[in-house]
Every structure is written in C-alpha cells, then in structure tokens.
Length: 211
Image (cartoon, rainbow, N blue to C red; front, top):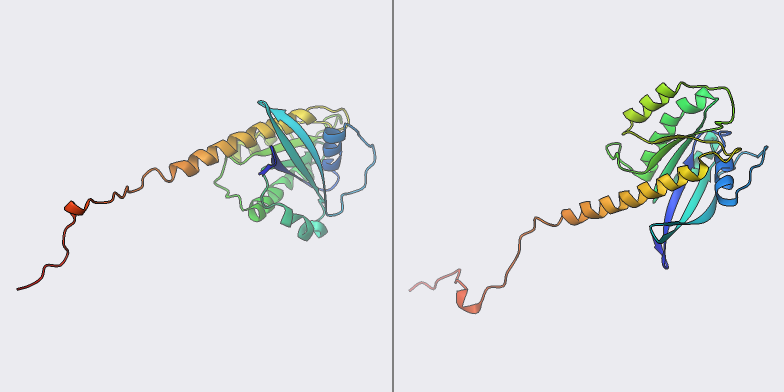
C-alpha cells in the first residue's frame, strides 16, 4: 500500500498472551524493554520507517491481544496485512502448540489461502535469554517445513537479540511477495485474443438478399 512517496507495510504480531509481542514491538520501534508489561487489551500499533534498496517503507506494526476474549477486536485488523509474525515463548510449550490455531485464525480472516506458501509468515521464538526450553528445535523446524518452509528465528526482546533481523527479513520477503504477485497478475492477461478492425473492403455480408 502506497502513502505519498512511501510504501506502507502492515505487520501483524500474533501469539498467546505473555509471549512478548508488545516487548518485541517496543524494542524494535523505540529500543526500550520493560521487565513487566500489562497484557495488550484489543490491539495497539506503532510505526517505524525502514530503508531497503534505496526505498523507504513505513512499517505499521499491530500488536494484538492474545486472550480469547479479544478475538472479536483483533480479527478485523487482519485483512490487508502484508506480514504476519507468529510469536511463541521458547520456554512455554503450550504457546508453541497454539501457533497452529493462530495461523488458522489469521488465514481465515486475512483471506490467505492455505495453498499460498509465498505469503510472508515468520515464526519467532521469543525469550531466548531464558535457559529453559519448552520445545525441541527439531520439532519447531519440522513444523516450519510442514508449513511451506516457514522461516524461524530465535530472538530475545530483553537482550535485543535478532529483533531487528526478524523484522527486516520479513520486509524483504514482503517486497518479493509483492513482485511475485505483480508478475502473476500480469501473466494472467497474456493469452488474450487480439481483435483487429477489418477494413471496409474486407467486410462480408452475413445475409444475402434473395431474388
């Protein structure tokens, strides 16, 4: 989506409550980390300008409330998304298990077909600073492989580890996805029938007058 001379990319952060979505967003946009934060109520967003290949993009980053009671508030914001970052807590196995339902919810309301493996999804495991692990790396990578080779990054909002990298990887993928969509849409109109106007001398009469 264009806005003035800038390209706006809508980024949605999804995941259970308490996995650190707000902390990731604030670390990336404002470079701050708060040890204790309140759960997001509904949705909130922040903007950040980034440069890629001599072009400026405005990231409109939406942090959604992870509790079930906020579902009706967050789902209207899914439509028109350019990037979806699925966040779980590396020390909490349940938050990883729930990623499947978050993905299904997003696909449904953002109208992204399950067969579309090019949409810019990222699986982000937050809280890499904690020693405990709720899931094996092999299990996570298998899940990613089964979902169109979705990229996966371990990050820590607290230590500012791989936070910027995660967002920038998705900006690159979003640009590539948009280019692919444009080529696909252009290709849809290649096999058309060319209609040429006939010269008056070449016109044929469809009906001959009977004598």
